Image 1 (tube, rainbow, N blue to C red):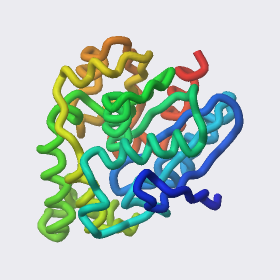
Image 2 (cartoon, rainbow, N blue to C red):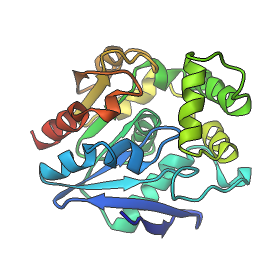
Image 3 (cartoon, one colour):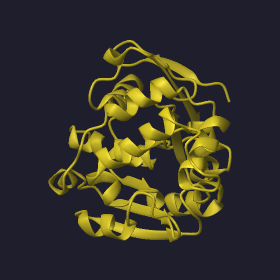
Length: 248
């Protein structure tokens, strides 16, 4: 599927793909990934599209077919949320749903904190700690990028490095993405007022507990699906859970 390229708020060329037709839903992928790996490859986007949705799938800055600038000036604070707002404006969307996986979930929350108002929200592969302890998680990934050969085989760091190498990550660009993230507090979560699905693998605690996140949000429901942080995106349960929530 050939991506469409559009200029973001600062003119950087960013890519997105679309699947299906109907009510728009924007889904944001995770770190070291892209729209194809996270949403298309394993049928998640197709399952949501089959439920009657126009699924819009950007590659985040520094990832996939989007721009990979190495100039730190191209990564102001909240750059990913600003890119999403630019995509919404480019497409002329006024009524849409918004969600993400892992880094995409964190970006979704930042979009709402900056004033975006989707009708429904999906936070996948995310727990409460992954939102309110951003600097700790960022530091760990910066270590993964900077010293990829420092982790013993089979460790979480080793697994992250293997995924990073499989997806040909541009480490310099992604490091800038990580440093552009904004630390959040519980008060920031009050912006997540739309009905929200918190969906997470039962063996995924990479970003803290999803149940804690659901309890901290004003209007959220929790859905458990099989898998770990890495494996749950490969299973049909993720697409079915999201489609059922959005179509309800």
